Length: 104
Image 1 (tube, helix red, strand yellow):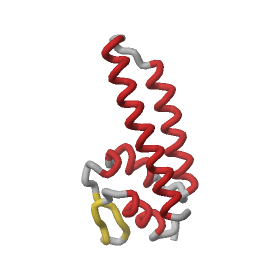
Image 2 (tube, one colour):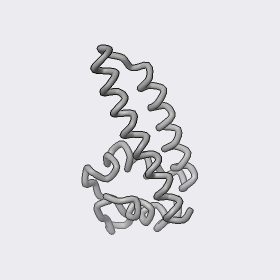
Image 3 (cartoon, helix red, strand yellow):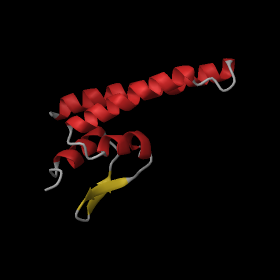
Image 4 (cartoon, helix red, strand yellow):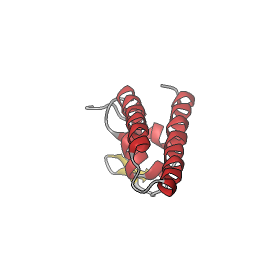
């Protein structure tokens, strides 16, 4: 997958994640413990993440970047064979994923 297409898809995931958080904040204000809308949207987001991850080799890096590394803002590092760096951009994530074939 080209870097440009990868970035476009990651932007969709990031914008969807932000929108879910914004929507949940509105509903939390109106209805205590309302989770109905959030569950459906989170399910959609999880499927977007899983689909992209599977297309990129299924190693779990997309999920790690979105959830554990909070879209790159948590400052987590990753790499192969001791060559690690902070993964704080779509470009670095793409480089990480494409730098090593799964199972090689």
